[in-house]
Image (cartoon, rainbow, N blue to C red; front, side, top):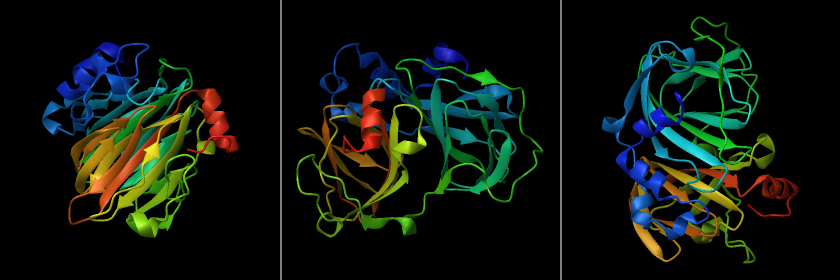
Length: 314
């Protein structure tokens, strides 16, 4: 979206500091204190744009996490707002893939020229080489996110089709992959823990998780997407990020995150990067469930293949 220079202008001060801190060849975790890496969503820092990818109307957003925040194949997390009637126009990426998330309202999503209405909160995967767009077809301003991961580290691209998707024909049933961010669908199964340790039971940790998108969904180094709940007073199992880095976004609740030996507070609409070689866990210090969206990206394409084959446990 207007290339690297404009992407820098759209960053919050914290995200810009985070980007500057990442020096080639040095582990991200060794450079920046944990509290400084956690980025709050600040709508006052959003930068307005018009006709994004030849879309209708206008929108505003900022970069929360920048390239390399959780590993070399992670490109960014953008967070912003799309007014009613506005869109991100129809376009392609041939070396990267994205996941659009709407936290409220409804939107018309287009994948490969087929459009359906999706009710938020929801996520839609835009895979490499598949055209995509989003139109706010509701009456309220959409709270929107976009994650991007690459097949080739440090590379991104786009090709616009000059189509704002206003008035597109709708399919009653989506022909593309989408999921609802529905707490009721999260089950006490698949709790994750440190590699080599017996898997903890959700009942003992107060943590439940749901895999929204599995490794096989993605063509890039993107590994998976999870939806996690940590009960009040509970601490999630410690996760070792030996081969897969994770970006966490707090959808609801509050608590603390522990990364290595450091602990810092987290709250609703915070973004937390956890990089390769680190360990992490969350403690819910509030009175409601701590709800997390988890995006994981593998160290490289070889590791991603190992994850799909089960040789590496994500």
